[in-house]
Image (cartoon, rainbow over all chains, first blue to last red; front, side, top):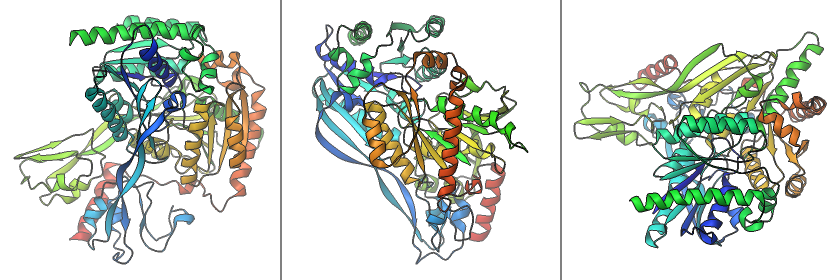
Length: 312
Length: 325
């Protein structure tokens, strides 16, 4: 079974629209591949908005723990404040602590707390303990185009990388059990921890680039990241005609760095319309230019996946 | 006053709004006497920083940043395993007579150093990225963090950027936050006086706006919304803002000329100078909103100062030890 991840560096370049179209084409297209879908953007998961799956299972995801100070045991020695490098312990003395949070004794700002537990181990009166936090949920759903694993991180919580890993693991396990050929992973923006989790173990990455100053800048960082983790990458350009000179720059960069360019998607208002209708663009308006371009891209991507499948 | 520009969804126009906001502030200040300090612009999207492409600063100051990671003195280590026991991140492991440190898992909390009964652990800075700052031609004080490729954790870079580029009193700060709703976003917007959420009127935009609003509520920040690419999509965002009582402070219509200009690295107020008036009005409404609920909102002094430098930490460490002894 292969793993395909869709990344971009910059947000909003069209990762999810492309992932949804790939899900549709893998199911109904001329190059069918039995696919499990995984939405690895757990901060802002949108694939389900297009695929509108029915939910089969929901599970809790416990994130890192936070420190809690027991005021009855606290003797006010201030050691916790001194050892905390995240400035999460709020001491009773008036300082930068917000009025709304200010209690009488020492307490921990749960938003600042990193969960390192240094204060727990250093507290001479054992007044501090760690409490696990519900950081989100993950779901197994059934979409029109195959099983979908997705998650919702509680806003302002951490550990999105771990939740991404969990979602991918679940998708992979089901895929292996039931003889699927590929896991299509819709990745998060950026290049940090959730992206690394989304890309780890991938056989192929498709980078969705935008021909804008910012899009090109971030595509380079995304390609450097996939190269760092030795994931083979292909590039496609979305909204390619918005700034043709930018598209040329992307082409040139790819040629120079020996990265295969798998297609250009023109700017097309039907992509947004399809999103509003809750359908992949290739299913909503198959004859539109954007749909045709995405089909060509899928053809090349599926070719790579099949080729790599037959090699292994 | 510190205004953080954020959004759940990526690519909605955070940087477009933040850069034009800063440009308007920089241009307007000359009209009052004495002229206030130009704004400070913080690009906190350290994974994919883009604001420099629009404000075009020439960086003058540069500093490497990172975390302090443990280094074990094998001669003193008795392999008791206490360091591994206290580490919540599994960043240090004791295998037989060997101690392994995994820098990419380490959060630099110092717990192992404090715990080691043999004082065998010292700390070394591990570089994760750079901080850069300058004054752009427009007069804007610009600072950004750039996380190194392959590094997992953006939050420490953002935290240190905020400390490194501390504003002067009364200086307006514009924070360009990363997309999403998790730790890097929280670190970027923490300490802000106002959260400006940029969205687009599509189902994705709406879904992620709802999440971003929850982040704002969690942090108890006053909020306003900018609807970008107005005219595409549907009416979901408008309805949501109305029901939630979120003011829509500005609408930027979908316009190919804007898209093309942004693509070439032009700030919005350069493409369409008539937007300056709208940005000025928005700034006034934000300033009013901030002063209107002054009880909840603290001034810039409220921004916690993070003590991540080696010297500071060593001082704390010795103090902590002395107290314990």
